[in-house]
Image (cartoon, rainbow, N blue to C red; front, side):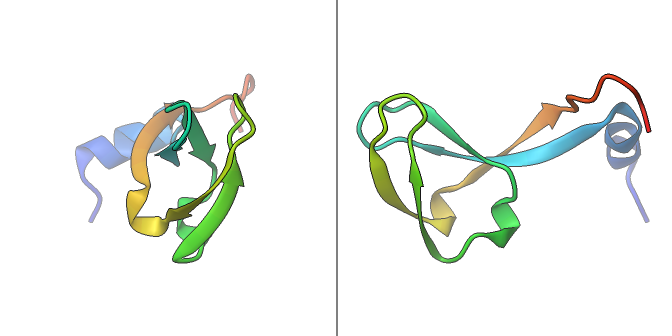
Length: 72
């Protein structure tokens, strides 16, 4: 059974994304499919270019608005 918040999020087009913080410059690095990463993964920072090794448990999930202009 879905909660009212989950139904509202689906109708508004809200999706979840993972975010880790860069070890060097502390800017956020967005991970589009956080469930698909392995226990250890390596991603470059979009701001400074530093390529760090992160753990899956370091990812925090945030809700993001849908970027589509036209609804499906």
